[in-house]
Length: 173
Image (cartoon, rainbow, N blue to C red; front, side, top):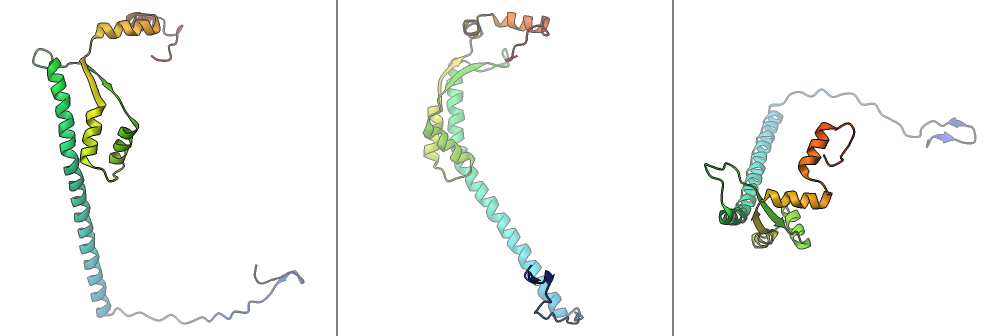
């Protein structure tokens, strides 16, 4: 609205003069083609170098985390061996573990997951502190705790839910 004249209510003619130039025909020059192909070669080379750097960075990141998680998984296996591991007779075993998360623990885990700078020693300490009170899963104890908490046997809850599912709605099932 720069060319609007409020007094007359009309648009003014523009002061700028636009010059229309003729199009120049561009002839394919061999020197430009050579220069263009060299640019593409350099671009491919740089893209390849970037990929190599990212791959190396990823490998460094993984090599730092492997020993930490190896120690953590070893700790889990040691605790499970104390209680008994699955064998040919029992293909699967259930364990209960108490997990404690502190604020610092949570911050270290978030650093690791977000790809920020982290130290393997700090992460090792964090993982060591998380898993405590590893014990064999006792269904009877769990059943009694369920009954104490809800006031009904879990078996009866399931039977009522399946038999009279339309009459009684349990939000947790």
